[in-house]
Every structure is written in C-alpha cells, then in structure tokens.
Image (cartoon, rainbow, N blue to C red):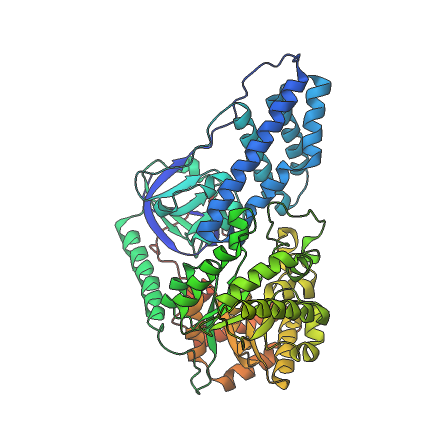
Length: 604
C-alpha cells in the first residue's frame, strides 16, 4: 500500500497513537452435534440450563474484575448481557424448541438468537443495532459452554494497535490493556462497547471505519488520531514527524497542567473554590493527590458490595474507609452511603421495571436498617481524625433525612456506650439530585449541614431522560438552561441558610461548564482525578466577575445548544492554549498534500 493512505471514522476516545497493527479476527460459532431429532429432550434441557448458569457465572466474574480495574460505573455495560441470560422469552422459547422440535440445545439457542437478530435488523434504531452485539456475544458464550470450549482472551507479544471488524463486550473486557495502544473497528458507534471501554481505559479509539480490516496487514505501521477520527496507514516520514510533534504538543500541555497540582483553585481576582476528587476505591486516593485534589468530595461506597457479591461486614468496610481517610489526611473525605439500584445492579437485586425511580439508595437503606447501621458504624469509626463527612443519596422527602439522621444517632450512641472513638461533630449532608429537594431547598437546608448536587441524576429527572438509554441520549445535557437555573436555585437557598454547596456530577469535570458553576458561586467541585488539572486551569484563568457575567448570559438562553456554542467561544477566547484538550479541536497534522482516496469514509 502506498504511503499516507487515509481513512476516516468516528472518533470516540481522544488521543494519538502510533504503532504496528494487530489484526483480530473474530471466530465464528461452529455447531457440533446432530441436526436429527434428539431422543432425550429432558437431558438436553438440563444441559441448556447448566450452560446458562455457567455463562452467568463467567460474566459476573468478568464484571467483578472490571469493577476492580475501572469501577462499577464503567463496568456496568455487562449488565445488559447478564440480564439477557435472565430473559424469560429467550429462555422459554429455547426450551420450547428443544421440547417441541426435538432440537439439540446448541441448535435451538442458535436459531432463537438468529430470529431475534433478524427482528432487530428490521428496526432503524442505532441503539438497538448496538445491542445486537450483546445478543451475539451471549449466544456465543452459551454455545461455547454447551460445547465445552474455553473463553480465550486477546493477547499481544508487544504494544500494538488493535484492529478488528468488531469487538464483543467479552473481548474488550478481557484485553491486556497495558499493551493496547488504540482501538480501531470497522463497525460501531459512539455508544458501542468498544467506545465505552476505550474511554474508560483512556485509550485512543476510532470506530465505523468500514473497510479498514481489508486494507491493512499485520504489523503495518499506522497512526490513530482520536481527536479528528483519522487513521493514516503506512505513514511517510514527514507525516510521522508531524504527528509525533502533535502528540508531544498535547503531552506537553498535560504536563504543564499537572504543574498546577500544588497551586490553589483560585480565580485571578482572588476567589477560591474547593477542588476535590470523586473516587471509588481506596487506591484511587493516590491519584487524587497526584492530580491536585484537596480532599475527596465523593467516595462511592458501593464497590465492596458489587465486588464481593454479598454485604461486607463492619470490619471490612472500616478497614477500607480508614485507608482512604489516612491517605488523604489532613484533607476531608466525604462518604456517600450505599447507592445501589438504578444503573448499579447488585447480584440479588429485586428486578424493577424502572429502577431509577424505584427501590434504591436511601429508600433501600431505610428498609434494610441492618445494612445501613453496619455501614454507618464503619464510617463513624473511620472519622476519629475529624476529617470525615457523610452524605445520604437520593433524598426526595424531608422524612428520609430525618429518619437517616435518627439511625445515625442510634449508631453514635452505641459506639459511645462501647467506648469507641469517633467524630461527634461530623457534618451530615445530602445529595441534591431530585427536583423535589431543589424546589424545597430552603427547608432541606435546615436539616442538612451541606448540599452536594448530583447533576447526573438531577439532569435526567429534570429532563425526563434515562441517561443509560442511547435512544434518547441526545436529549440528555447537563448544560440545559433548566438544569443550570435549578443549580443556581439550590445554591442560593443553601447560602441563605449559611450552608455550603458542592457539585459532584459529571458537570463538575466539564471544563466547558466551569465558568457557569463559578459564576453561580458554588463552593466546591468534585470530579474525576484525571480532569482536575484542566478544571483548575479554567478556574485560575477567569475572574469571579467574568464568571458571573458568563453565567448570567448562559442562564438567559433557552436551549443547551445555545449555551454550548457560547461557552465554546469563551474557551476559544480565554483558553487557546488548552482548547485542544477541552474541545478536542486539533488541526490536521498530516502532510497538506496528502489526499484521501475516493470513497474513503467521511467523519461523522
């Protein structure tokens, strides 16, 4: 192939990678056995049920490993497959085919799966098309278990760029991530599993390249530009130098941002804001400190429940919580009590039609006082150094916070009687993520010591958009004026009652949103450690006066599109040095004379 052959696809994860190609070919399912009617249908049904049970156990193990590596939020895409294994229609129809048509189990599930996939292909819906990979993957896993085939992971002998027609969830979940420089696939969209995993692993990725696997050979050098969606095959020396220069430029920007680590998050006119980290595991505390966090604004406590598969005891929880407190001392750690339900499925969770509006978080804990008290005891015991705060999630009614505080008081009394030290003056806050609390913020401010605005749930409840449903994902936007005005209302109510307010949702890590949050005078921002340097740079570039002007204009807009366009212009004007990292806008670095081949993909 000639030098500088260019393909364009859909950029789904930022970054630039240069290296040899590893071509992965997905093996098809080979059905072994008879196509003749079987005699013992009951035996075949037992085999099918055992394969289902084994498949579920394997997926739970894969998910458990992913949760430990990435956290439950980034591992929950496997829940789709776990739920597919529990689908009554697939289960019943397969057994029906075995019984009535006397089919072997492998043939029966294969035919049921193909029939289901055929129906999906008739629907012109991107979300459902993406989910066909789950059906294929689950079917392949069941058949492998029926035929006693081993589930093999993709392995490399050196650092390479993974090129495939498509990658199943199982494939991506079991990758040796240390050796993957980038992902490239012929198929897939922004919400494909490959895209989700690439972003979670912070690996550059481009999908939807269509014919890439037919145009590339094993070991061939390629360039992946995860900003522009460009793939350069067999790059010339000049193109290589240009991309090396671009990559170095972006790495230099990131290093420069890390130099802000020990500087305060203070505006140019002297207004300071607390900049904390959201973490899921005790080991994440080190990353939080390395990126300049001043404390933990949200410690998600679900990890032990989701990785152990059973409720952890007080000792286990205490040891984990104390590790975080000691690691971050003398900075503060805010523990959010258990928030199971919604997009976080516990193995034996009660199935619900709409879990986001169901039995989750504080509702679950108030009905499981045993679990609640065990966790509260562990958190209180970890508070001995007086740097711990606690907050309750998904509060929707005043009675819930009153009941939760009463239970906390019971636990405190027990510990005092037992002579176990703890912080008796610990601040107790609530997550503000439901409109009822925003509307009655003045009333709730009288019961809570602080508010932490969870904008992920708040946005989906205000806009009536399930954020995990890609079919309506375009409607979900935390920069919607309705969300911004609600945040302002909450902050004003808290300040009227002399209470401080933090924001711990994704908006707190969106550099585009920082001028608005500064302008409405939020007291604390808590976000992923990785983006803290960018957020701090934005804060240190603006004045509070400028931020208030920017926020005032954004609050006057009627659509999220208008807000985003205005804020992009602000970033372009005020932060030209890092706008490439914030907006993902990078000029093409390849040779200006390089031409795309006719018919090559266009960026979507």
